[in-house]
Amino acid sequence: MALPAQQAPAPTVTPASQTPSQAPSLTVDRDPVRSPDPDSAAAQPVVTPASSRKGSDGYVLHTDVEEVVLNATVLDGSKLVQDLKKEDFQILEDGVKQTLLSFQHTDVPVSIALVVDNSGSMAKKRPSVNKSALDLIEASNKEDEAFVVNFSDEAYIDQEFTADMTKLRDGLSHIESRGGTALYDAVVASADKLAADAKRPKQVIILITDGEDNASTLNLEQTIRRVQQLSGPMIYSIGLLFGDEMSRSEVRHARRALEMLSTETGGIAFFPKNIEQVDQIAAEVARDIRSQYMLGYHSTKPTSEPGFRRVQVTAGKGQGKLNVRTRTGYFPVPRNQKKTAAAGQK
Image 1 (cartoon, rainbow, N blue to C red):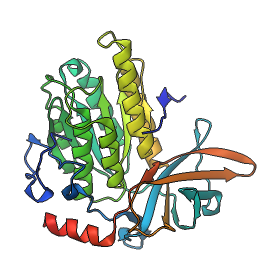
Image 2 (image 1 turned 120 degrees about the horizontal axis):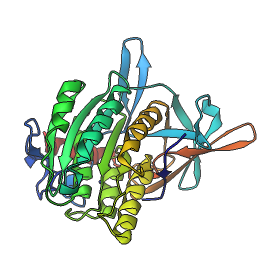
Image 3 (image 1 turned 90 degrees about the horizontal axis):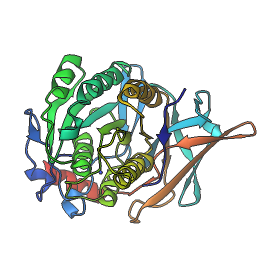
Image 4 (image 1 turned 90 degrees about the vertical axis):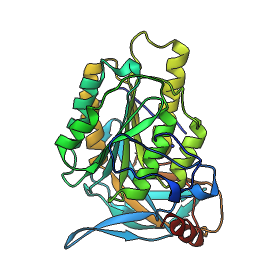
């Protein structure tokens, strides 16, 4: 039985006013995760959209500057649909039908950011949250990699990319529950790190929090825009909004933010009624990630044409319409801009 989840329309640790080339190394535990200003020219994405196709030697990364890659979950009610073919999908970009060129339905490896609220109100919840986060990783592909970000009024990377469960457990155990909740800044910094350092083209943020953002330098709209500029990760949010610590208005605002972050990026937001439900949610997230279709197409618009591209994916089998969850769109990045930005980071 599926746990409560919401979908609605709508980017790790303290953003800094520095260019990517000036960003500090993130190889040492407790380094703040820093991100450039998402509205600055220097902050434009440098990661080429990619697709992963399995060859004779395993998973091989192929890049194409004009390929748009969508990871899509297909549901019939609350049931995952696993038997669709390429011809069952239709993609519209700004209302114009696109030609689906690549299609894959395989449990490909994923790069995961575990982004966990470390504010004071989370102190009693962290042991259960940490166990559920580790269970999620263990239930996923053995070739996945993950890193750990703990955030309060600042965000810290407490474990670099690894597949070692002991190291991830140690990273999650760095609990100093205090301060505010700079959730948006943490999401953006984590998305930037995935874009810069992840080995897997498929990327996910698992965001766990029990409150409303009250300490970020970015707002919700800037956060979503940055993730979309990166053609960035799907965000799965787990909002621990039960209890008496928050007013109804605070709960409503926090819920709306998590729903928008998740829905706009193709993920989903969960709102358990108690801490005991988190473990089941983690298992559901793992199944969702492993059951997705990967769809690739070349836009009918040139990459030099700026602006947000709204994407809609539909799927049907027989007479029935199915529910497809994927990111709502993306910002194209011209080839010459990619090269300029990449040169600036070297």
